[in-house]
Amino acid sequence: MALHAYFSSYSEPWRLKRDTLCQIAGIIGRDRFRTMRKALDELVKAGFLASWNEDKTSGICVKVVQKN
Image (cartoon, rainbow, N blue to C red; front, side, top):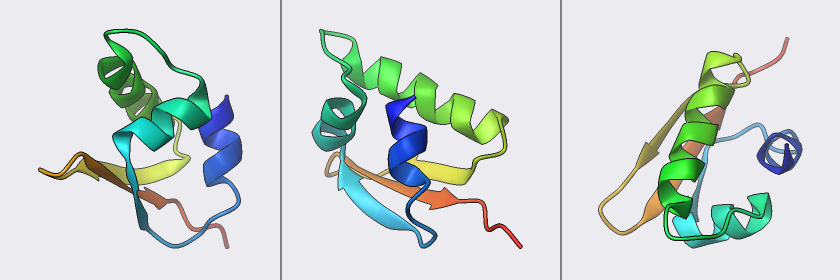
């Protein structure tokens, strides 16, 4: 998954635009934002992301689980 590969190179939380994340993941179409949210939820369920949230300006902030 492209999002997993992209996020694996970062350890600190940071913010990206929804459109940027969709482009990274190759998600297109009318429901691209819904698909992207589901993908982020799956990364949380898998234990790779600690959390993610979306702000009112179409920004997504992700927090990768810290590895010891």
